[in-house]
Length: 190
Ligand code: SAM
Image (cartoon, rainbow, N blue to C red; front, side):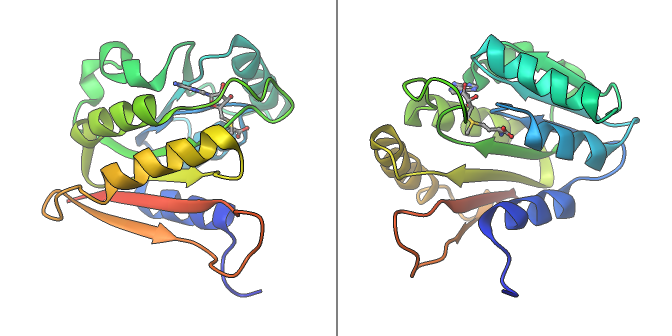
């Protein structure tokens, strides 16, 4: 297939927005796959701010980074991404170039602990002011589970109403796949 799958496309977007020396956010670090990707993308002169409400997820992500000899350029926050503006250093205000949300539950973890529409929207609103113009927020939306459907509806009604003078908002989705495949919402700050 020549068309990018959803996860590769998410990374293509992040790689367009962020690079060496940049400050970026992994809003849902989980097992750390995206954290590792972002750590490599911004290099040792850049920084990744990674959030998760589960300590187990943070431990899994740290282990992955260690095993892969990643640069020590990641700060973990064991709290909700909706607390972003109270925990990020003010030095990165207006300077973030990329952020990713991989929504849903921790693979291999408790499926009852999931992201929710309200905190996701809260965090996206905050990120929109912390991003640099041209910075991209990528949301990977999984809506095959019950909480995921509710979250998708809330997030979609919020992002569809973002002022077009404030951001470009893109939806990337395979529309003929079965079983509610995940899709991407990308928000580029203008
Ligand atoms: N990106 C991860 C990876 O590479 O393995 C997968 C993330 S997983 C689909 C979603 C994660 O979001 C879970 O680990 C969950 O604990 C976390 N989460 C749920 N609500 C959150 C919140 N309000 N703030 C930050 N993380 C949250």
